[in-house]
Image (cartoon, rainbow, N blue to C red; front, side, top):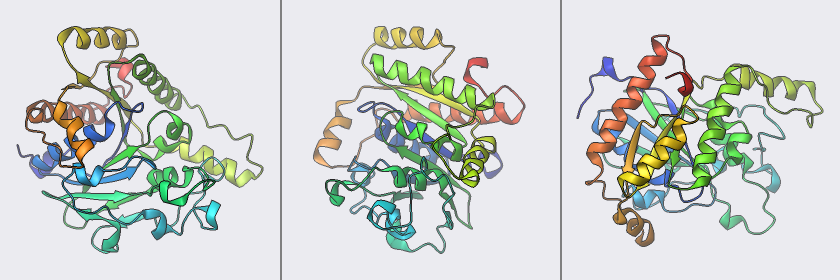
Length: 312
């Protein structure tokens, strides 16, 4: 599958992936990155999950890149420069990154123009290292480019709603929620949908804890100037039609229509267990169709259609 340059609707966009623990968002990131590469896009994945390990292996890369935390000066809790966005929403200087000049130790290149960066991991820091807010802040602010072709950036966020509450979505163009067959996933999908609608309605972040008027202004500005257009949904780990139908009915009650389905594949679980490359041969055609729906959603937004999924 190939997409001509003037049809690359996602070129230059930053897309965040969210989901509850175990929903399969990292798998979805790998599958979507490969679909984008097949379509002729240059892709950079930013691993913003501070505790999950193995994304480089799932992509078929031998080594993970050095953490971006090191490049930007480390976490404030350890005497570094990068703070939690809740405590200090000030954008990180120098977060506009060009792959043409960025130090190569901070990214790993895989097949077909797929690159991987990592915000950092907390495991090596030990007990009492502090929260992973600085990693979320890097993921919020980073923008990746390349001279030869625009880059689609896919951000794999930590599980749950916490990073969303930190305002990371203000740095995105699109958000994708991975929904597995659980009540927790259905609740998260509805919460994300409502959060985006509230942002579009002008809701501002919580700032009563901030003593500095400048920090309050920064936090409000990030929400007011956010380029987040909409949130989309993908069903994952679907084993049968009954399960898919149940999820679609429940999501439809919140006016949510998923853009696609990833069916259960035991090979994905085995790949994460053994630290080997994910084999996407069984799901490739489904994910390619999902990519087309994703591109169509951007076209709808550009043509003036309502950005909220509730209005689709």
